[in-house]
Image 1 (cartoon, rainbow, N blue to C red):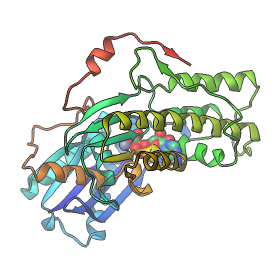
Image 2 (cartoon, rainbow, N blue to C red):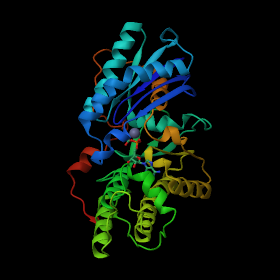
Image 3 (tube, rainbow, N blue to C red):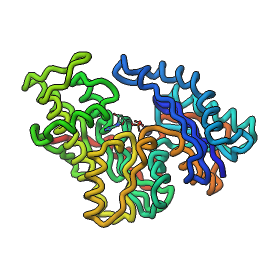
Image 4 (cartoon, rainbow, N blue to C red):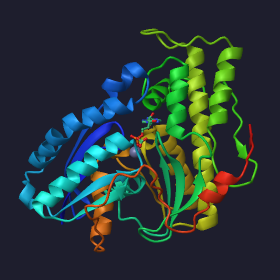
Length: 358
Ligand code: KG4
Ligand code: ZN
């Protein structure tokens, strides 16, 4: 089955042609990073306008690179949510119209499920039960996946996503956007033991995560040690490199420590680490060491597939389509989508007051 995947949930317009959910014939991504850079983050209105401009040429390029024409495509998979509403609508409307005009099935895909499926390429097939850490700019969750397509959130961030923390700390230090890759680069020349950050503990005792306290601790350290944020073109100072390394180490320890705790409890057959922050080598190395210790394989997406892309959307779409699931023309973008179809504790947790101790 040849699937055309389309992704436009945030600031990447992407299209991919994927065979049988596991073979990428093409994957094209138009990143809007340069467009949003001057603003230090994604500007939703600019993002949707850019998606409108790019979607047609990106789909055409994906087909050309796959040496396929529209008549070869069996089905379409498109990101339905979560994400920015204006951005999502561009992909959803485009995919629905295209599927309608071609008379082929289509399916709306949860973006987070897409990240879980980003490991479907260049790795052995995932064995279930699996435990999946999805860590990106908008999301930080650990999912228990007892069988393909069933998800229970077993850990979530109670405030900021890990990628968001990377981005905010980078902004605070005058390092630019997006923060993750810049902090990772500086961290290589820094001493991670220079600044001691304590791990956040959630007062209700759940294996959840919190990064906003860490961000505040970085801000306090900057203030108390009179660290000057970099101005345009400044070379990074050693204290900034040390701070980047210490912050990165604290994030990695929180993520991998929680993954390990849950893996010991749930004994999965496969660990998955996916999402934009999975580009981070320190995170990969720590997850590999832990997986080795636990005797479980850990799969990562390749770097190209860690950040937002359409191949992962096609792969997730394939798993639904092969079970006969499709969407109809009433399907629309949904920013509230959650990946949780087993037991849901989130509603109850939202009502509960918690305290974070650092
Ligand atoms: O998955 P993604 O492309 O978009 C979302 O769905 O959010 O993830 C983007 C996030 C950004 O916050 C970015 O700073 C972070 O992933 N990121 C990294 C690295 N590369 C990207 N974080 C840490 N280290 C990296 N090397
Ligand atoms: Zn994403």
